[in-house]
Image 1 (cartoon, rainbow, N blue to C red):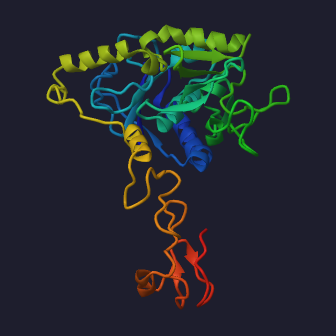
Image 2: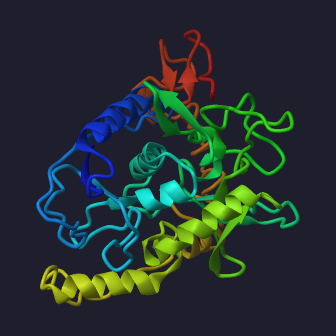
Image 3: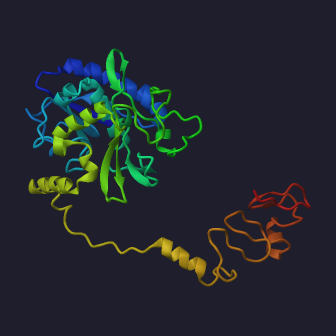
Length: 357
């Protein structure tokens, strides 16, 4: 995956400075991120075809995705972090003015955006996990974000600040118990003797999720975390350009779609298509379990446990060939066959029975 980087900071960040940061972030991806996530990408600095970035027609996008560095937050011009343009190509923005206001090096912001673009290029992944509030004993759908939970933490590569990020086991634990021996983020910093736990939050970070009970998206930080609150409120300046809008605001998505169609692109693709005709496999499976026997089996077999036929036959858990049948003897897979093998295991001797494993 090639991620094109386009510099529209009007000289506030020189191409030379940007190249130095890109080199460090590429090292971070190759040496730190890939060994854990097995998802690779390379950032590449491109030229500029216009004075302002055109997010609807990414002429500067020569790779598989694009990230613009922009000096000011212009919501009307910037369609936001990781929104897809009308050709379905992932793109995002790094607002250097926001990074400066929250006291974060723009290189760390670029690292943050690049890692999350790699992890969720189409901005449509959710992970089932516990509600961040322990008082809520239920599951929610967490955004698949690589850096948000630890976004206030950075480290250096070749003197360049880059963002900390979570590891795969972060998304696999429960509220009470992590995976055994889990490391849930790259740096593993401990706060009050405790490292980041699965679906947890470190100081200065926050996480977003869809709450199916409330029917909306929400964002949580640690209680009383002034740093996280400040970061969140500063980023609200981006309004529609905020990354969170990609999940929680279908109206904004519709607005972008209308903008693309108004330009005449995708008009043919947007033509009405016939509705899909679908059915529930779950309901059909339930009918099979409760209904008459199939495949010559007895009444009401359970497909989940295996289909039982004549003596010795059990499918799904392991398949034993019926002993003593003429057909079995012909295939050399029954009791007493020399060197015979059952589908579930091998016969130890000429007189042995095949073992199911």
